[in-house]
Amino acid sequence: MSAPATGGGDGRQLASFVVTGGIAALANVATRWLLSFAMVYELAVTLAYLVGLTTAFVLARRYVFASTGSWLGEYGRFALVNVFSFLMVLGVSVGLARVVFPRIGFMWHAEDIAHLIGVASPILLSFYAHKYFSFGKRAQRA
Image (cartoon, rainbow, N blue to C red; front, side, top):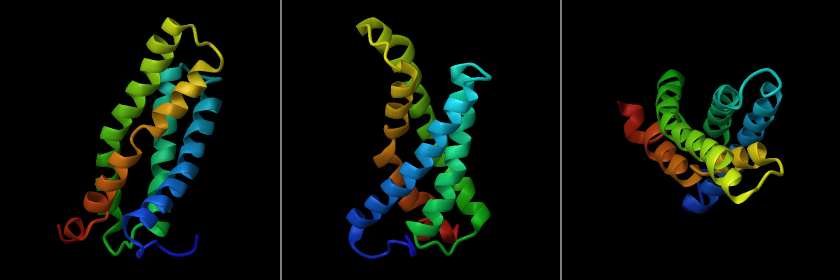
């Protein structure tokens, strides 16, 4: 990955977003796994999300969206979008780990799998929100 995916329409840009988001998700999940040795699952998910957020911003700004806007403004909008995404990640992760998986008797790495599913859940919502709000041309004029 050496340049932003500016051509090829949404498909190519979405693919680049998924790759960079996957890298950020790995940072998120690895951080949560490490933090789980020192704190409760819910707090580990929360702190790991902040690591994933910053990783995702840096990679998306550099490799996915042709950014010419203010770094601080874009990070603020990126973080705002991710507040909504975080609520989805936390709800899906905790809902699966604490409610769904115990009810169906699924115990094999339940928290890990719940967190992976949770991290993947807001991909399309995040892509379009970042494309048009975080890094969009109108957002840069505001």
